[in-house]
Length: 193
Image (cartoon, rainbow, N blue to C red; front, side, top):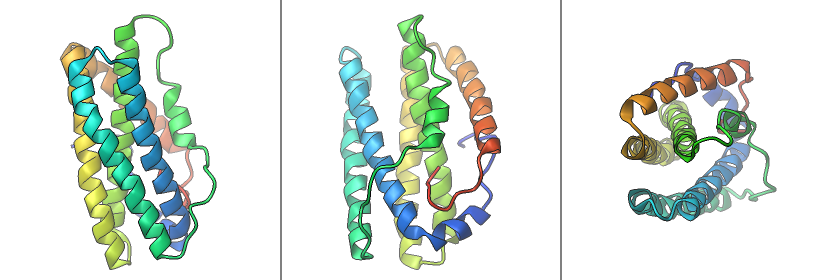
């Protein structure tokens, strides 16, 4: 369904669960940044009614996820900790076109959001299937389902504003670009991406 060209090695779960505090902290920041990105889309495109209508509930949901992860951190006795840069997202942002037609910039913003949701969904799925902590299996299954829906929303929004053939072509380019990023990245047990 997601179309990712390079799957995460399931061994990542073994690495991640050794530092689950770091994964949970990073996950919390991912949720916070997702809510902020959606707010930015609304602020940038207030005249795009469908975008505002579709993205507004995602803001609330992502913020709810942030709060849920903070609660899980606290329940396990972990501190939230300082923010860290997300190298994966930084690399993805290099794909975004600067200047030129507004339509192209909007398309890239929506597709980058879709890609981040797709990769998060894939990682949450791995955690929901393979982590040894039964409570976290359920926890991450819920996040996986949600991220899949967000991924679909961003793709559908792109198709509302830009010709579907153009969306499909650019999405394939992004999948190729993201696969190159993933190929260069080491498996890290302290990051969601």
